Length: 154
Image (cartoon, rainbow, N blue to C red; front, side, top):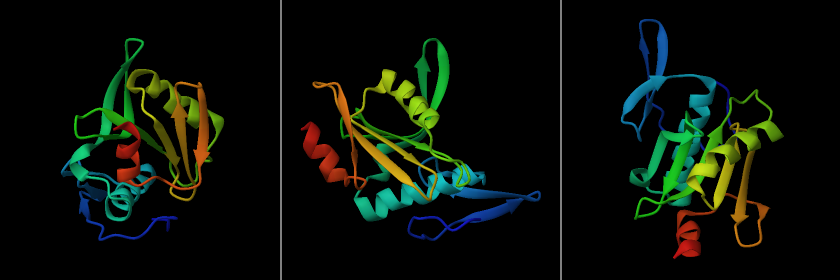
């Protein structure tokens, strides 16, 4: 797989009937190794090991009901009361981050109403903070640490 703009970690990959699978620590199972899953696993480990996020307060493939349609958020980060704080959308490294990707994550946020949206293809990462009072958003220079997320809502 392609080298990403994320720190390396001890990857657990196995071959099952000629197909590669990668271990997802959050779902605690092996998942088909696709380019998007490669990005997800690296990004999740980056958040846990370098940004202080708790594995137990993260969910992968979180189901949301949007206008009577079931959609799946790639990753959702929660606080200790299990209120969503951040939605993360992953794309394969060859997929360009476009307005359509941001539109997708914004649709999920109609349901979850988080303060942070993150989009990554493993090479480029974008994080924006939403301000519901002023109805504005701003792009951040870096992904916030988990304590920065918590401090803003407490």
